[in-house]
Amino acid sequence: MKNNTLIELLPLIAFFVVYYFTKNIFVATAVCIVASWLQLAFVKITTKTISRNTWLSTLLITVFGGLTIIFHNKTFIMIKPTILYWIFAVGLITAEKLGKTPIKSLLQEQISLPESSWKLITYLWVGFFIFMGILNLAVAYLFNEFIWVKFKVFGGLGLTILFTIITALVIHRRKVENELQ
Image (cartoon, rainbow, N blue to C red):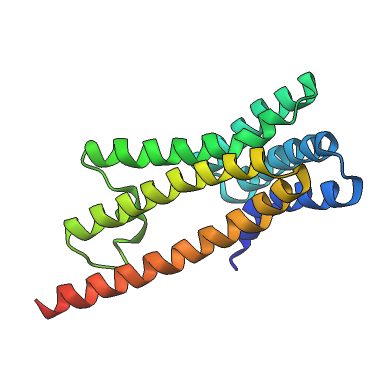
């Protein structure tokens, strides 16, 4: 795991550890907000650039976490992942409609694929983000708080890793098909 990936996970890890020991979602949320801003400062100091995703995540945790604490209502923090997933989905669709493919931009130096394959991969991720948003809401409203916390930390991360592997398999298959033509 790259160091920046570990740094990106620190607020989530801090949230889980504090929740696990306190069983208090409000304290865990406050710690997550602080950890997110510390992460942002660390990334800025060490790399000089902060990704849009990191900014967006920090902003959302601050807003929804702040609302959670101010109103003492866990619903705000529980819907935050859904909103983030759906913003990513809308962002990918919007970029694609504007003729840009963010996933291609990330990977095109390592992988050569036809434009149709990049569009497919983009729409697969759009579908994944929509699904994850719905799944988060289902877990938040159908299960207890502790189950939601475990899902947020382990389920969401696990499903994202699994979908990344599936994407790699799709890319490999498309690359092989492209080379055979």
